[in-house]
Length: 124
Image (cartoon, rainbow, N blue to C red; front, side, top):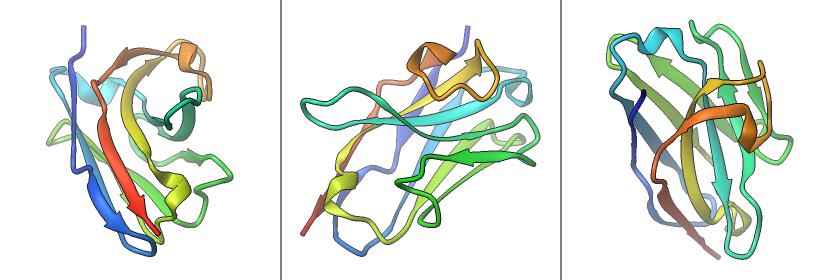
C-alpha cells in the first residue's frame, strides 16, 4: 500500500508557474513508476505526465508538452510537476498516482494508488 500526499497547488495568473510535489509513504518508492493526472470541473480525469522508476524516461500529454516537467527524487520519496506558462485551461485538481497496472498507461485505470489532489487555479 502506498499513501500519496500532494502539495503546491494554488492560485496563479496566466503565464505564471507552480511546482507541485507528491510525497509517498512507500519504503520502496524507487520501485514505483509515478504519474500526474488532472480533473477540471465537469470533466473526466485526464493524464498529464508519467515518469519511470529511475526518472530516465518521461511522457507528457500533448496539451502540456514543452510547458510541464515531471521529475522525481527517490531519496526524498517525492515526485514533482513543474508547471510553467500556465493557462486558464490548466485549472483543475491535480492528482498524483503510483504503480502502473499497464506500463505507460494514460488511463486512470492504469494506476493503483492515488492521492487526494491539490487545486490549481489559473486566472486570466
